[in-house]
Length: 143
Image (cartoon, rainbow, N blue to C red; front, side, top):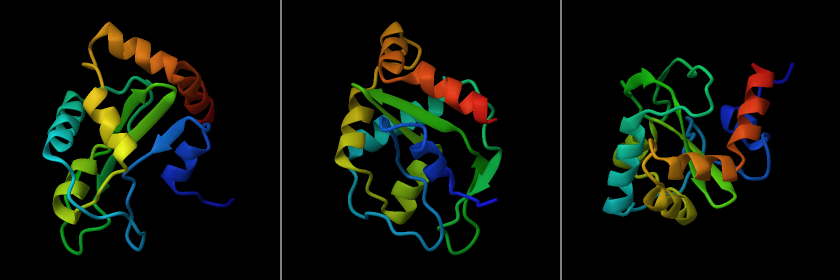
């Protein structure tokens, strides 16, 4: 059985699923200055800690990019709908931005800034509109 990286698993869920920020040692990633407003908005989404897909987290995870003693914490996917696109990022993405100067794609940053409050009906509608229900079924079927 061939092992695939988690971001590849997510990409295989469909053309509208766009994983962002699943960094690993030896991988390449864009670097630069992330706009403060987008970083702060992303922290709010991550602090809210909503998992609308309804599956268990991937457990505990340590930053694989840090040379020594990377942060260790729960690994939960953050789902950010934007039009027909569903972005998904790990909770460690803010660490990657702050510590490793990871620069997420601009369309992801736009989605973060536009993301409705995750407790709102507007978020739920956006989540469903971006294929959230279908994604949830696909993931559940593979667990």
